[in-house]
Length: 404
Image 1: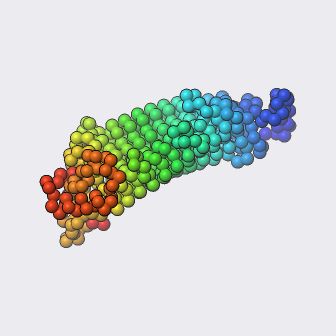
Image 2: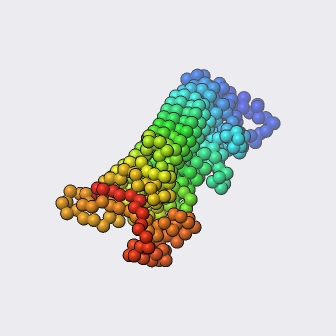
Image 3: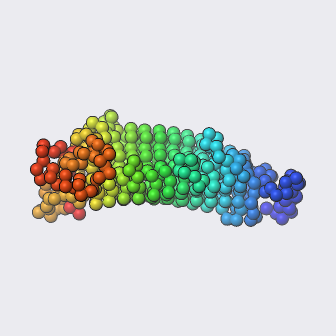
């Protein structure tokens, strides 16, 4: 922006604020005189929001400009296609959950939001009927409140074909997709929040190469078909009521090459209610979890090939003996496998069978879960295996367990 124009803007803003000398210059004034296609490069300093952008412009804060909503509504609202926002510090939204007060609200197409820092806001970035936008390399956090009182770090509502990548999202409530399809959520880090990601009626999304750690829960799918979950790390989620991965009423979901480590439950999934409600779990690693996988419902039907189970207290738990029995188990590596590979083809010579022994206690009586891994329950389990009072139930059989 030319020096003369900048001086004019300062004079105009000073006239507007003459009765409130302590207030910040309004960013809306600078936005309104920037022509379509223009670049507004902000000198270092703080500017007052809220601001609404209604034309395709670029705003560059150069890493030294702050836009402060001063506790009123959404700080920046983008209502035009083709807007670029970069290198801004966005802070100070309102506090209304009903109005979805956010650092940034995007109702546009083909816009770019990158390299911004968004903090002390209720919601972080709200995409509302937004299409084909890119949100990358931003750092997003909410208020210093209890997790349930914060807003979503990223919220997609009726939004499609957006790319959300390489963002750091921390100390928010959740990341939520609602009726949002065909988005790509790639390479992000979500930590110290409640639900890492929750997809509700949001089919055909891609969730790849993200890191989720120290959240209460990981990735939750509810009636969201065709989602692909690949190459993610889900770490350190020990809350007894949570799962790193939870899938309900969703079909043709692909879960592959993920690392699920030190969680209360690695995967929770219901039985398919229809033949097409199948999950494909391939090449995942479940390590040092209380329960690696928990299946509930009448019968299985999911496909589980080439997964690795290491150091879990319980590899597979079920709500009924048949919940996982009809799953297609093949080629998984089990650290509890007691067979041999005499022909050295890399596959165990006998099937790996999993039975219910003392596990039945805490599955039928969840309160006993507190004692899992204790000497008392280990003794009960040993006696059950040594001299069972009745034939134990077979809950799964892998006919070709991997040896390495």
